Image 1 (tube, rainbow, N blue to C red):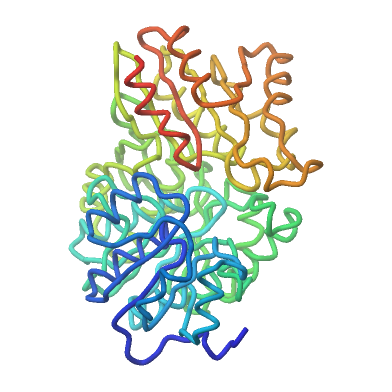
Image 2: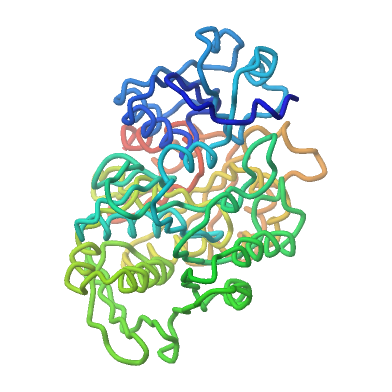
Length: 473
């Protein structure tokens, strides 16, 4: 491989994105298009909401990876981390000497340079926290640039070029590209950062929790001395890693003794009300449409950062109240016969647990039917086999789909949905295994009743189960 090609040329007009339908790559494509570049892209899995988003922005997306997708000889290729060295377009790119770069490189070069970078990182909660922070800054008239991995319902997009002094970034610990195995967040130099949580994930690139902690420790240790780090003290690993930061660190959580704390939370549909204390003194009572304890902690971190940016409390409050949330994050896709069909991106055991708990908190009198597809690399591996049973405790009925793409995981490492269903039944839970999506739809159509909440959790499109189920109902 010619590393000299890993650069951004001085003059760029046309840009091609390999694996464009990833959340981050799709956002970058929209930003580049809006900035005046001619943008094309390609991917294998093309489905809503990203496919719709790209089409609405006039971005041509080729289905499948083929050398001819580069026949127009773009000035630059941005290679997503889903593209391997043997990708046909990567091979053509290298053979033809086309300059290439990673997503973080492109973001730094074209959009972040000269602005104060606000990074939100952590195993869980990054997308909601970064999107909420961006919205609060926008409410304050600061017109932030931002790029997050979920589409804001307020804007129906997941980016903004921004004319203001700040750029909000969702800092991902996943590797950057096939030619750069460092975590993405190491490419950014933040003036302020939020660390939500640190748990084992991404079993395809991290061996164990120790390696994950090492990655976050590298990020924290690289923070400039003049930066601010806001860490969730409720997460033990995050608190431990934050203690290594060379900069000013502020902790937040449920304990009133912390510099920032949340208390007296209550739900009154559609609002969650909660009080915030700053160094032991009440800052006031706020409300949000976000559900669950984890989202209260995410919101608290945003309040703490907004306060450091000197945003007045009434404007922070207005930003929280007007934030409509993220698509595919506790998103109600439809209601039929008083049956709620909800979509969520949860896939890690902790995310599944917190999502179900949030829905239980918000709908205490309803029966929760949890439908789960173990789709990402970690979920399709048995690394979480013994942990998932603890995640479904607050669901009434559990439907577990067979993991997709089983051939991509070595037989001895594969997660078993059948085993999970058996273990849940042994705990007295009404749980069933299903070989495909159609079988789940037919089963739910038979057993569902008015006032049920059908909570569908998957990191992918799940065979369009939401619309198919609504049509069936």
